[in-house]
Image 1: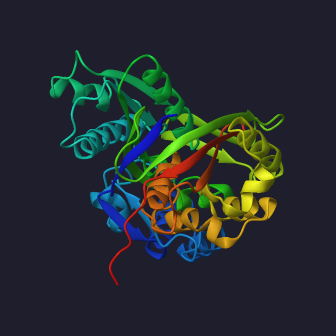
Image 2: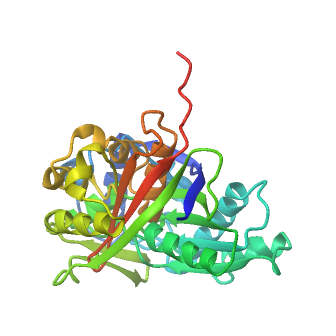
Length: 378
């Protein structure tokens, strides 16, 4: 068994209330139309933002690194400024901003840590070579002690393959592997795209950073033991979700059928996941917590209904979505962190972790809580 512990997150530079985000999006879409030489009323885009955007009831705040989203003065925006094309600045500008923020995140998340024998960098929202992981290893003089592995472009489910990669490093003799997620989803917004799915995506995704430790020895504090993992690629769903490079960053497409496709596959998938741990999903389901990647409100609700879960079993996923939005691969570890420090999740409790991404890929990790979290004094 391997153990996951020391889940440490970094809040992005800015947290914006979702109501302000919808207001910003409406104005940005209106400005993009103006730049393209098309007439349009701002009120029309405000109606689209509130019709198709993720409501503040589901997402209260979203974090972001880019200051552009904090004001409505296009003259001083770095990506969506007055001199930029209607789509915003090109991929080179966005990539540079990604690199700066990823470097900041690595410095903050690994502050005070010793050189790990294995360091994994997980992201699907930017590429720079040498990476922020390699730059940090070089700057700290860890180059002969730390092996760097990049786990890129898998999407929202990437935390689970990252744990598998860490397990491989431990099996090769490493004492510990540290995993770092740097996701800057908001850098890829294109306000010139007005399709309903783009309003959903632009109001759903956020930036997120988190790091955690994988070891073969059980830690002293709150941790999770990894009991089993599984991954299924759902047949006939390749077009349902895509994440491709474009001239203005990455472009995502998302079919309305995704929640239903995933929900229909979950019962059989979870039977497989629990079986690999020598357990019965049917017998264990009622006592489990579920760390469901909150791809959106419909994803959580569809999974809850398909599996017949109580609201308290998915509460951690709803809370992370409400407080931070969808941070791609960094989101599921944020749910783990919440459960790790929840005093109501006791030692021995099982946590069924589920995440999804292009493919459609369905990934699962069955965890067991180790160590109790202290209750706060009344």
